[in-house]
Amino acid sequence: MKQEMMTVLAQKELAPKIYEMTLTGKLVKEMTIPGQFLHVKAPRADLLLRRPISLASVDQKNASCKLIYRTEGVGTELFSQLVPDDQVDVMGPLGNGFPVEFLGKEDLVFIIGGGIGVPPLFELAKKVKEKGSKIVFFLGFAKKEVIFYEQEFAQMGEVHLSTDDGSYGVKGHVGTMLSKVLQKEKPTAVYSCGSNGLLKAVDHYFADLEHAYLSLEARMACGMGACYACVCPTRADRGKSKKICDEGPVFSTGEVIL
Image 1 (tube, rainbow, N blue to C red):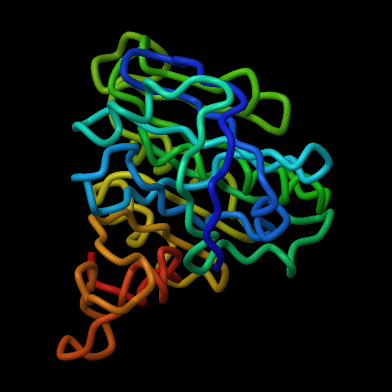
Image 2 (tube, rainbow, N blue to C red):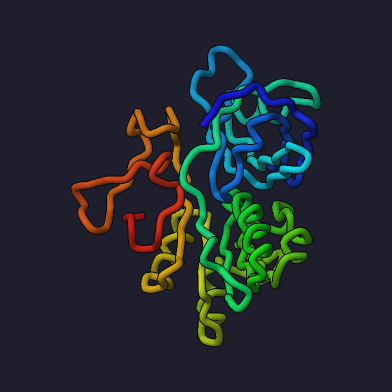
């Protein structure tokens, strides 16, 4: 983990309140594992706590990375106002990411995401694609107008989309699509990031699968495991807990209580 003032290359609104910010800096060399996140400081002196934002895409050749975030408060609203050549204080990459080293060309991989949990799955999909595995995406959004990266995901695999209000794709949550597909296909590996409800469904469906992983989202303070502000209980021993920031955010199914 390192800290750096990275430079903004581009800022784009992908959907209402959802932005894609492209950064460049030496820190990109450290960003080699999908599923890790950056701890970004809002550009205002009185906002002391950083915001954890997952890495959506990394381009080592051009020393750049993309963050996709939703504006939900003052800090993220300030991020959305940054323009090219602005500097932003970044720590990272942080946390444990998604393991992909065991995958091969004969493997079937399910990548399951919802809403603002979708971004880290894009960099993951790039790594899985490099392995030659077949990818099937199950992605859920609240409504059609907040869907992003549909075509980008479609270039890497088969995409199944759902919306809560039925304005696009299948009406309902991602679990509805999963229950039908699982009657026909069994994946080698499953990766997921999204709401707690979505993660609970994936945890249930793939409790016995050797390679099934959940990426948890949580409010964090230090982001490095020092403050214990983002703990969750373990399934093996409810008296013990794991820190989402440095022992996660990626856990195996059945490892923690959601």
